[in-house]
Image 1 (cartoon, rainbow, N blue to C red):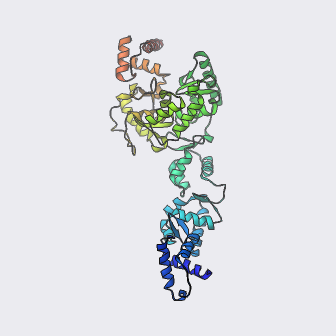
Image 2 (image 1 turned 180 degrees about the horizontal axis):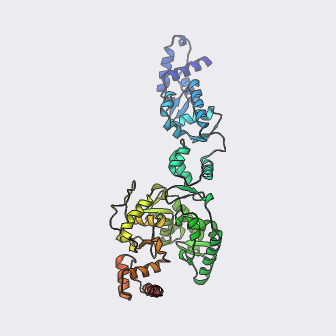
Image 3 (image 1 turned 180 degrees about the vertical axis):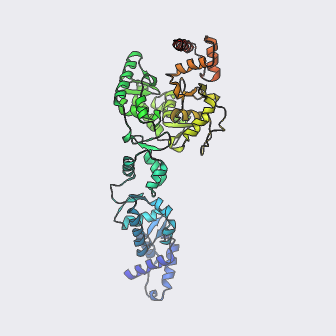
Length: 464
């Protein structure tokens, strides 16, 4: 019987290089070939036994069984041994894609079959997705090691050259860990472990937050400065650095509600720090997020729609009124966008709505420029300009101005723009200008009084 089994396997290898099913039809085909061989005429075997031989000796993939010869198996093993001398980690799918012709010659038509061969023959570590020299090797470890010895931030292209047999989506998935990696303003990636901190400034900022909470119950992001930390890490967006510093140094004592900081021990249950953290994790895990999905999630966590919108802006890019996307899905040519904005800003304060054409803006693969996308760019990536508004909104309300102006807050922005445009410092004129030009969504008499008062202060200071 042993010789019969061997003969059946040889018949399958010779005649079914594209795989065989263990059903009656294919088993009957094997039986006919077997019975047609003169030396086998006196040996009896049934289709049921042949089907069992197929099932127990072949490599199954999608309902078909493959019989790879010992010579082909040895050749595949030598091929992987050679690759592993130059590469620390090999994903089967990437190796197969790059060397399809070679594997087809060995009658391998699927990365899954390739994996099963290596798992049974290779002396290297072979997991479900990849093969490596040791069981301790994984992509997370390899990327950490690569960033540790790198002099600068690394692009996805840099990492693809370093790891040619790792699918790009696997690299991006590993880089999406906010506790280990941060995206730069140029679209590269940097290791959080290599970020430099000005601890004295952080301690001072923490004290300023405490003082503001004691004085008025909360602190705003304008109530303290992290300018030195931003300067030490100029490759990264200020918003991202602020989020990182909050998580590492402030989160134990404060809860954040949008741009406001409150004492962690005085937050109402409905908008607790834990709820904010859970919503932030939910947002970070999304590739695409509609407003309905965002607001429904916020409601489940007991968080206001306004706070949820603020969190979405921190962690994603708004490409349309109703849609946010993950940062990794879009790459900005920062310098080109800033250059295009220069034609509109011209060293002045302008409303976001005054950008009425995107003809001079660089193309974005898969997306079209609009005011929502521009606002997200200004919030996180621009090196020349700031976007400011009194509160997050879906009406394109807000201002754009050069970073060189060093304006303290949005009250300062409004006061400066009415002086810039020579608006009479009386309530109706100021309110009409700010609301119709898109600096505000509606008239706010008390806020207008503060704007006018600040304007008088600026005039007095300039007169000295």
